[in-house]
Every structure is written in C-alpha cells, then in structure tokens.
Image (cartoon, rainbow, N blue to C red; front, side, top):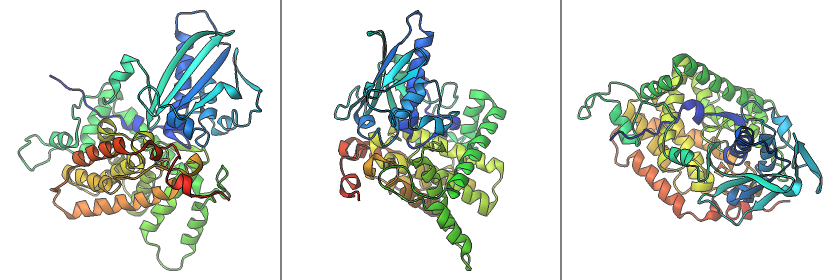
Amino acid sequence: MVTSGVYTSALEMFSIGIGPSSSHTVGPMRAAADFVHYLATRNSSETATHYTIILHGSLAATGIGHGTPDAVIAGLRGMNPETCDPKEVWGQWAQLESGAHIRIDDAHVSRDDIVFEAHVQSFGHPNAITLIADAHGVEIARATYLSVGGGFIQRAGDDDTADRRGKGTPGIVSTYRTASQLVAACKDDPTSDTFNRSIADIAMADEVAIRGAAATCAGLDHIWATMDECIEAGLHQEGYLPGHLRVPRRAANSQRKLLARTTPVPADEWLAVWAMAVNEENASGGRIVTAPTNGAAGVLPAILRYLVQFEGISTQQIHTFLLTAAAVGSIIKANASISGAEAGCQGEIGSACAMAAAGITAVHGGNPSHVENAAEIAMEHHLGLTCDPVNGLVQIPCIERNAVAAATALTASRIALLGTGKHVVSLDTVIETMRQTGRDMSTRYKETSLAGLAVNVVEC
Ligand code: SF4
C-alpha cells in the first residue's frame, strides 16, 4: 500500500501574512475569506444581508488580544493575509461603537455579531470559528472552520479537508511520515552509513513536483526577502507595542547599543536583537512570515540573517536552510502539533527551534543524521513549555522567547555537529513526547491566558 507523505511545501509552511498570530489572526482571516468565496460560488441566488461569527475556545479566550475580530472582518471583505495592507485591517471591529454596523457589500455586521464562547471547546478542537450568513433573518449558509496552527485551516466535518489532516501538500512525491523514514530516504541502501542525498534534496523534489523549480526558487527568495524586510522594519520602530501592557519596543535601541560598542560584538548577540525585531513587528500586526507560527516567527529569520551576514551563505544555502526546516516542521505538524492552543508553547517555539537547528546544521555541512540530531536536541529542551501570553497579547513571554530559542537552535546545532549523528533519543521519540505532553497539559496553559504568567503579571 502506498502511504501519503507529510511534507508541507516550504511556501505553505512559511506563508506571508500579518501579525500577531497565525492561528488567531491569519487562520480566522482565511476562514472568513473562504466562507465568502463559498457563498459566492454555491448554486444559489440568495445574497447575504447579515453575518454572525462565533469564536469558540481559545479563539474566544485570547481573540481580542490577538486581533481575531478585526481579522475576520478583513476576511469577510475579501482581504487575504499575504496581500492585505495591515493598516486596513486593524481597528475595523475594535473601534466600532456598540450598536454601530460595518457594511460589507450587501451585508452588515455589528460589534455584537461577533460572539465569544471562551468556555466552549467545540468541534473537537481548541480553535474553532463558526460563520453564519442570513438573508433578512433567514439563515442561508453556515460553516465552521478549525484554525489548526501556522495559519492552516480546515472545515469542520468536511471530508476533503479532514482527509488532509496529517498529510502533506497535494502533489508531493515523497512518502515519509517520520524523521527516521526521512533520514532513511536519504540513502540508496538503508543498511549503509552512506547518504546519497540531503533532506533538502528530498524536499526540493517535492517542491518541483508541486510547481516546478523556478517558481519554487522564486518563492523561497521571496520568503527570505520578506523575513529580512521584517527584521529591518522592526529595527527602525520605536515606542510602545499595542495594548494595555505598554511593552516598549527594544530592538532598535538594542541595535544602537551593539553598534556603539568599542569592543567586538559576538555574532550571537545579534540573534536576540533580530529575533526581537521580528516579534515586535508581529506584536504590532505588521507584515510577517509565519515560521511555523507567528508567535514563533522570529527564530528562523534571526538564524538566517546570522548565516547571511556573518557567514555570507549563498542563495542556494538559504534554500537548503528553508527546505530542511520545512521538512522537519512537516513531520512535527503531522505527528504532534505546531499550535500553541493544541500543544502549548513547546508546539510553537519548540518547533521553530527544532526547524532552525535543522536548517543551520544542513548549511554547516551536517549529514541527515546530524540534522535529525540537532532538531531533536532543540525540541527536547522545550518539552513542557506552556503558552500563557499576558493579557492575551503575543508579547510577554513570546518576544524574548524567540530570542532565547534562536540561541538554543545554534547551540543544538553545534552539539549535533560535534557528534557522529548517532544518539540515544530520536527526533520521532521527542515529537511523540511533545504530542503526549500537549495532550496532558491543562487547557489553562494552552493559549487561553487563564494561568501562568497571564494571571501572575499584574497590570499597572
Ligand atoms: S507563549 Fe508561545 S505559544 Fe503562546 S502565544 Fe506566545 S509564542 Fe505563541
């Protein structure tokens, strides 16, 4: 029997969108846009005159801090995360007076038409959103979507999308589902110690099968360019991040301090500044590359900038980094989760750190066993990490957490490259442990802001 592989294209894994959250901002925007598309293409002459939106579980618990209602309105207006102007998204719902309406073509939505059901985990998933369209009070369509992490959505009860769970991008040619299978696929002879191809080679074969080499390379270049633009944007913003916490932006000032030093600055110190620059942009709703989520979007760009600026890696090595990271992220996504609402922060920051560690190791000449070892080390030391964003904002602990994870990724890669690639704990074991730990973790620590730092940090 031929099994389907799990590889998610790097161009999907690293999708370009807006902050602050892939699951709570990007996913709901895509769900609303998909619902409008469904309404427009179904075989009916009825036109929606009014929408009701129900946010369930974590989407309701931290939706306001994550900008979910504004993102849903933007999606209903037909905007998509990749091309929208973030300035046109924010405030549409948040600044609406009670009783006032927003017009969307022939329909309207009032502030109270977005309903928050924070204590109801429905449809077997912590992040569900139900969209209802009516025509003059008579319901004409309803759909529920699950925002499953990384901006990916699935329609609840839809066999087509349900079938995609645990599967890769349509069109892939690889069949691996686990890290051990991926490493084995890098050899012609599984019993030999010789590798005949890299993990990036296998990922590239899938990408070529999906859309061809030229379009893939152009897409990877665009991803890196957008990541780098995001770092630069973050390095040139001052002031405070949105929200009641009054968290100051630190990246720009940190850069000034490093540049003013009269002694050499260790390259590693820049990692923290670049990671924070990205996540400050994310927290303020700016243009961001989901990698693999928005909350964890600073880790991979910081490492790539490090490799580009201090090691002068080539365009092809940038592709190797992104493809290797995407392959590792695909295995985690398929066998555990990359969603903070499903697995806690180990699923977001832990996954980003593992993906980054894998990418550096490949660029630094590690073989597939070294790559697997580096990802395993990086993930292992994030096991149990909870998600407890203060005030429901993707700021504390998220921003600093990216900076720390970038350094950890570098350390994990260095440890792996000093070894032979043989090690006791496999990446598959750590991913399964992450899945079980996430399953056993209290919902209070999974992007609901009901415990941890979220309740112990007192607002001034
Ligand atoms: S604590 Fe971690 S998982 Fe939770 S929102 Fe922040 S970065 Fe995401």
